[in-house]
Amino acid sequence: MSFFLFLHRCFCKVFGSTVNMDSPVMICCMCHITDVSKSMSARQKLEAQLTENNIVKEELHLLDSQNTVYKLIGPVLVKQDLDEAKATVGKRLEYINGEIQRYETLLKDMERKSEQHREVLASLQQEYQRAQGIPVAKA
Image 1 (cartoon, rainbow, N blue to C red):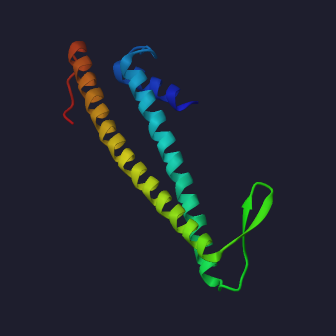
Image 2: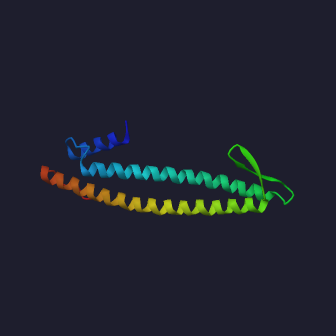
């Protein structure tokens, strides 16, 4: 069962009837969940790249100036200066760390929006329960 179908069924249980999948609340929730999922996936990829680049950095620090370093460009290995390779990896690590920080901020903002959505849904549920004459549970 897809998560969106699961979410739809939860809405139906909460509100006691069929909820239109095209309703603004459902669309907003589905879009938000999709955005969070994409951001989490991108952050995980960045973490993997960070780990890989840290390993490369460690390997480069084990080398001395007499060792030869090659860079893969397409199908060709091209000789590269050791200091240049270290600088390139360092810049790549800075970029990846910056992107991770950006996604951390983005995910915190999304978490804040999720909390706002939960509050809206709770108030909608309370309004629905009041309209049905059901005692409203305090949160």
